[in-house]
Length: 267
Image 1 (cartoon, rainbow, N blue to C red):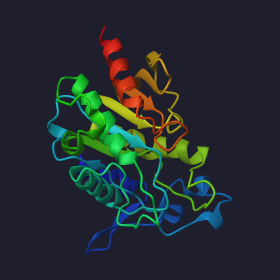
Image 2 (tube, helix red, strand yellow):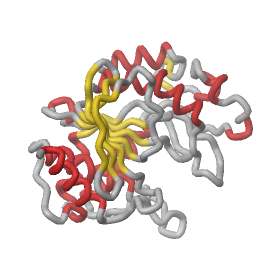
Image 3 (tube, rainbow, N blue to C red):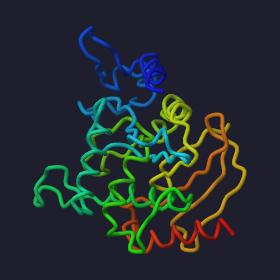
Image 4 (tube, one colour):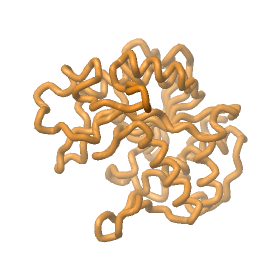
């Protein structure tokens, strides 16, 4: 899996070997699509724009039902092993019963993010629905199960670039979304071979035209959308859930909504 991904990343110009160690170049200089993605954005370049290899939990490849979580992009962060670092920090935080994670910053510097808590929570709900996992009724505080769920999933960012912008939290452009899907994400999905894609954010993905949609549904309150989709050579389930930082996205009602939605789909 990683051998094929490394070959692909080298082909696309985003990683290399300096005969000592593997390193990632600056995406706005090295990526084969950098001219399109960064046109007119020269003043938004920043050192953190570097390729990230997927986080793959220790038990992911052995799961009977694989869940790949897709985020939008990193906010002013990056580097070859950055996703692995973030996911491992998140797992440790969950193990210590922290819902909001500050990643080493003080409360005054950063009040913390529930993003990774929700990544683990929604993933655990999906795995539980597939009868591969056991969750307590109070899923928000079942921290032991959420920490363990991190070992069962994989995680990638839909867009690898994070343009500097203090007003938009490094939101990528539509060109970046389209190019990253075609250039990187399709290959990552193919190699990671998930059964279910859990997409954090309703507008995170720009799906390629070749991805035929076979069926759609939405939860009662509209926080979760479902589609059965042909993508990266296989039919897969895809769930889009309201992003935790979006308006209403941190609601504690969404986990129950997700559980009920999955139960309805089984009937």
